[in-house]
Image 1: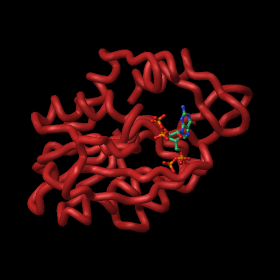
Image 2: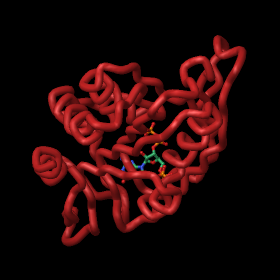
Image 3: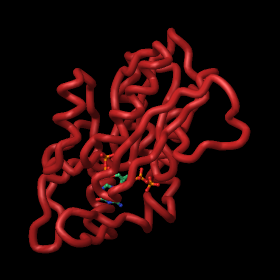
Length: 193
Ligand code: G4P
């Protein structure tokens, strides 16, 4: 997605060897116009899939996911990383290990929001090692629902996430794919949409 790649080049900062900081438009401050355009691209990519729910994980997946849900005219559900006192029954849960943050989180969704005949589009901000998406797939499968694909805003193609998801036979649609960082700038591979 050209608009997104241009924005990453303009505002993204590279931290250390492999972290892209995009807090001015995606992970902290949110550019809703860009998120709305991103949501529409995801919706267009999955318009034939009869998606009934969009699922993401808090926090930074929520903005692109909600606009994808708006464009598809379906509900958006975000998995929680901390158990909420109001989540009392029928909770679907899995453990997600983050290589980037080196912490394990227990991720949950209330089972009442996912049904057996749901067709789900997962949306997330980053695809690095794929552990967050894998955890969401596990939760959705616990509900007996079908994962139609994973929509990613920024894929770091030099990490293992895409391969992990493709090995699980899950379709991955990434709007910006970073092949590597060179001279302090991301180098893009061809995006999926
Ligand atoms: P994975 O889910 O693909 O396995 O990724 P990994 O464990 O390596 O990273 C987990 C967290 O780190 C995710 O945030 C992810 O968005 C974030 N992350 C990974 N690589 C980058 C990067 O290059 N830049 C930025 N800004 N974030 C990155 P999270 O734990 O889900 O938290 P939140 O930030 O969405 O609340």
